[in-house]
Length: 230
Image (cartoon, helix red, strand yellow):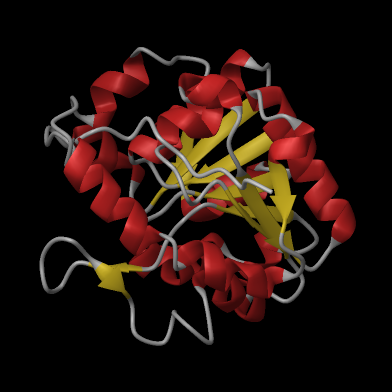
C-alpha cells in the first residue's frame, strides 16, 4: 500500500521509518520541497536537519502536500496541530476524498510558553479531529496515537511490555478496522486498542495532552503511557 505522511517533523519521520520497514511505499509531504531539503536547521529536539535524515532513508519519497496526498492510498496527518487544517487544505480535498486519514496531531497552543494549552475553539466541545472531518467530509478521519510519545506509537513494547492503551475514534467502522490492522503491525495488541466511538472521541484524547505534558515535564522521559484498570 502507498501511504502519504503529511508533515516532516520527528513524529512523521518516526512513523515513516517504521512503515518502510513494514514494506509500505511512503511519500512524505512538506510545504516546499526545495526549502525543506536546503534547510540546515536542526529540529526542536536538536536532531540533524531533515535533509541529512532523508539521505539516510533512500526508500522514502518527498513531495509537496498535494503530491503526497495524491500519492497515498491512505494518509497520515503528522503536522503541527495548529497548522493541520491549513496543511490539509493545501494537500487538496480532491486528493483526500474517499481515503482514510489517520490524524495523530494535537491542537497545542504555545503562544503563552510551556507547557502549552489547547487551542481556543479546538477543545471541550470540539476537537482537531472533528475539525478535519468537517473540513473534508468525503475523507474518513480516524483519530489515534495522539496520546503518547512517537517512540511508543510504533513500538508499544518500550513501556510495560506493551500493556497500555491506545485510543481510536472515527465515524467509519471499516476505516477504523483498516487503521487497527496497521496498529497491530506496529505491535499493538487488539485488547489494548480502545474504541471510543465516533470522531467526537477525539475531544477526550486531545484533552489528555495537558496531563501528558505535565508527566513528561516531571519524568523527563516519554517512555510512559496510560492503562485502563477494571
